[in-house]
Length: 213
Image (cartoon, one colour):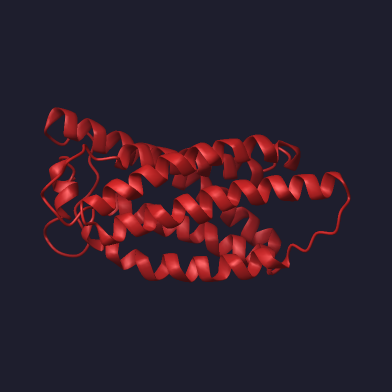
């Protein structure tokens, strides 16, 4: 996703996307009821691991002069992973000790997060199409979280959260593997689709062998 051909490091995108995929599978398990809220502290621990991975990814993306990639992974690291981990832990202990808890703040925090991610999405139209589609499904997860926290059609949006979390997790893992394998073998082993805007992907995508699907 970088805008420069000069790289001091190998691309960290497989790790960053892998962390996203792991987080999405955790959300899928939580939203679908496969794990209870009693698992929140353990889920938070996995989110903290994702925070470290995505922070490193953001730093290297910034070094490669990727405005979109660096900023998206930085926000994901800090507000989705780190804040998510702290929030899950805080809610668990507040409920466990029967202390006052106002969940309304989540709705107002997720609202600008959703707007921000939505306005960043067009930047990835010049990336492999699978990456853009992944971004759309992640955006839908955030929309579902906004609706659920505002108590809008909860029965419908919990299903949106469940299926979009699963699809996002699968796409993130697939794309992570595709980037690594295509770069390793120097050709398209796993297709990722051509950019939806323009004939060429961003230089970093081309550099790891995923410019064409």
